[in-house]
Amino acid sequence: MTDIVLARVLHVLAVVLWIGGVGMVTTVLLPSIRRSYPAAQRFAVFHTMEARFARQARITTTVAGLSGFYMAWRLDVWDRFRSADFWWMHAMVLTWLVFTTMLFVVEPLFLERLLSRRAASAPESAYRLVEWLHRLLLSLSLLTVAGAVAGSIGGNLFTW
Ligand code: HEM
Image 1 (cartoon, rainbow, N blue to C red):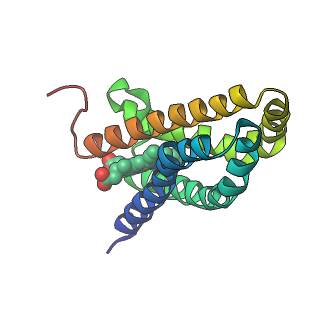
Image 2 (cartoon, rainbow, N blue to C red; image 1 turned 45 degrees about the horizontal axis):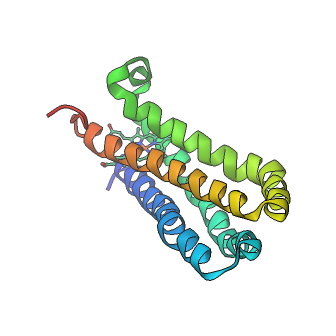
């Protein structure tokens, strides 16, 4: 075991827990709540159930970010950010930035209040918005994982 191996292991474990959780919320939790609760109750039920995952995701995104930047520093791969061939490096940082901003800034400061208000006046469309937001974030995350898994061994997701 070396420090780079440890960083990689922590990085992938954090990504698995975090993106796996996003997959579970998007494909299982949100549709189940939609089918089981009337529109007026959906947002509140989702909010209660998701709160625990959001706390976990704040930890896993932090571990993924720290281990990612540590690897980038130790492997000295900063020049990759100047090449479009390494789009998956940009995608990792972008995905991380989007989630970190959502979890630490946007959600606690604005989004939660904004969605609660919208859920009170237009519950059906507010819930649909939450579902689409999660589908979008899951798609970006899965594309990033696929690109990084292929790219880190010199492969390319889009060419044979
Ligand atoms: C601050 C953000 C991040 C940084 C700086 C970062 C950096 C890195 C670095 C340097 C590597 C090793 C690349 C190599 O071996 O050539 C790596 C691997 C990887 N990262 Fe990230 N990463 C970040 C966020 C993410 C995110 C958000 C995801 C997933 C959504 C992700 C998924 C992966 C995967 C799947 C690998 C490849 C693991 C393997 O196949 O062994 N990373 N990352």
